[in-house]
Amino acid sequence: MSLIDKHLAPGPDGETIVESIQRLILERICFLDYRPGDQLKEAVIAQEFGVSRTPVRDAISRISHLGLVETRNGVGTVVVALSDAEIRQVYEMRLELAMLIGTLSPKQASEDHIALAQALLQEVKAWGMNVDPRTYVMLNDRLNKLIADLIGNVVLRSFWLQTYYQAASTWHRVSAIVGAEVAKSLLDELSDLCTALEAGDMAAVGYVQRVHIGYGFQRIKTHLLTDQPG
Image 1 (cartoon, rainbow, N blue to C red):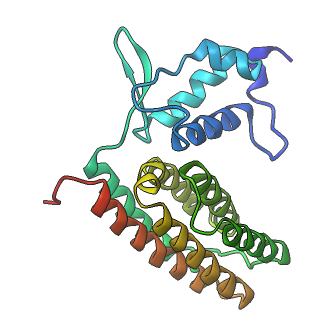
Image 2 (cartoon, rainbow, N blue to C red):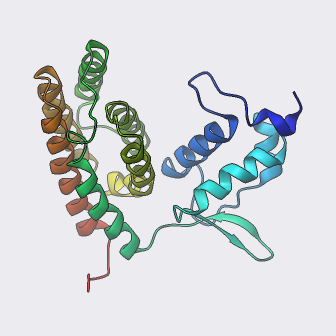
């Protein structure tokens, strides 16, 4: 198989190479490994993954519609931050999507799902109130993977993941401002989620997500946003 064709091959989790590159770039943006203003160099990323520039270009193209990267004349593709208005719209959408988790083809929580949630809860308890911003974002990323796996409707899952990465691009900044507050909130969210999963109540899973997304949105509005909604 040529390097140009390699991006069509499924990865170990059923991902194509393009999807894997897309996910890792998004994670790096959320972790602030790639900061606003940083240039995404296709040749460098291609060399890292051992592929041609074609799948890298495809991955970056998929990310561009999220508003997290843009192409500038004479510069190339750079990372950008969402505007205040875009952040508001993302959170408004996530609040609505959360309530659909338990109604649109929900999966029933398996023992593995429950065990993962319980293990994550214990890990967050062990960190206490001293979670640094990067660890906070990483823990949330693992939580989101668990929630996404419980969403049976593929269209809903696609929108959920899209708005997740858009929202997560703000979390490193807010965690750096109010670290103990977000650590306590994550602990409460996981505790509520475990209770819902153990009861087999998928509607409650969606409700838990909506409540805690609402709390997170309030922190974002308090600490990051400067505009006033019209």
